[in-house]
Image (cartoon, rainbow, N blue to C red; front, side, top):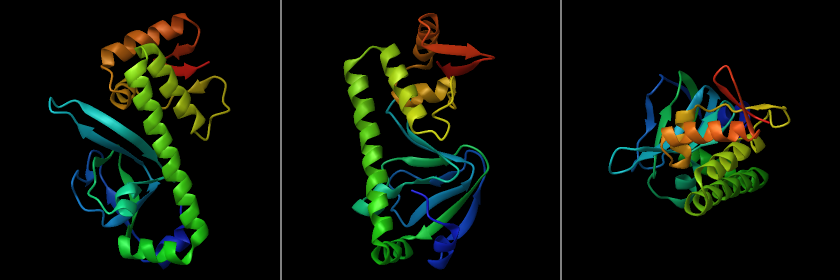
Length: 199
């Protein structure tokens, strides 16, 4: 969900700068703000007991993140970490609720965004529990393409690294590398100058 800058400022949002790898909030923090990225990118991630990172989502310029705890009034289940130097609007939760109470159409749009994120979680959980790695990777890449502003590009440049695809799917990076090569041999993916393209 993207809110116009004018509306954010009207409801007392401030623009804050974060360095690469800086934490924006931590798992178990209380949700005190609505966050919207002006420039940069953010990953939402958690760690298993053995230290393996699992990326719940990657958000880029013009996107918001971390809304479910605001709506559900529960602590953040993940960390939010800046992936590069980023500028992010922070709107206090009181201003966020005031905004929604006075703008029902915006409230409806948030419902749509949150429903899409739930759909993504359902797709990934189904893939992880039911299918082999090459199928999981291809489904994830197709989902990334379908939700990209460049979704009509042929071939489509996958904007994620192999490590990020591993962290997003719960697979080991070695498994991702091996299965990307398999998908390339089957003509489903193209590798050019170390970048991954969906045919």
